[in-house]
Length: 225
Image (spheres, rainbow, N blue to C red):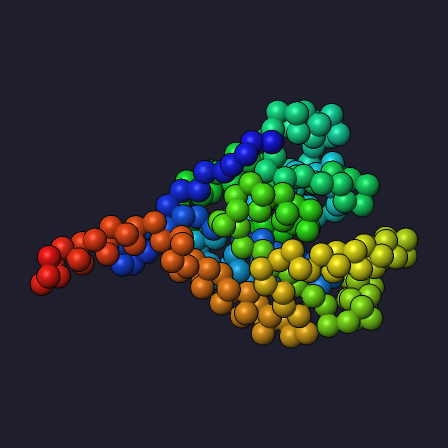
């Protein structure tokens, strides 16, 4: 795995430029991050989804290249060996990873990148891109509510639901590895908070690469100069 990722600059209405943002959403399965991600993508023209690669079988209704890049185990191992992933991890007996090339292409196009990945991926991504990564963790209101939501999907077997609940406790234990932690007891309110975080992080001074030049231009007209 390479040691860094190049983030292109994005222009804002004032003529400043900023580095691209890698915006991570994580949560236990059933806590609502996928719904929030869909709403963000629908409302934010400058945000694009990172599509993960996986070795798990395609589910009914899924589209290769849209929901996931579906690859076999041999192909996944080759991508790991060729350092084609920004991050990858074992999840539920399968492998999931973020292909590097599409992420770099999104950044170069002037958009930010949204990631729906777990704590392992968030940690790896932060090690690579550091301050350009913003990590948000979504908590369920309670474990009972989480289980109710999982059962309400009516898509998973009892064995899978039991496994997801067991994994949820482990995922929640890594809450302190995130920049922001929210409780999704109200879907609309939680989405609004996530969107506020995204907007605020885009405006951080440390990401405004064109700000120094603008300040220097202001100072050239200072009467003491």
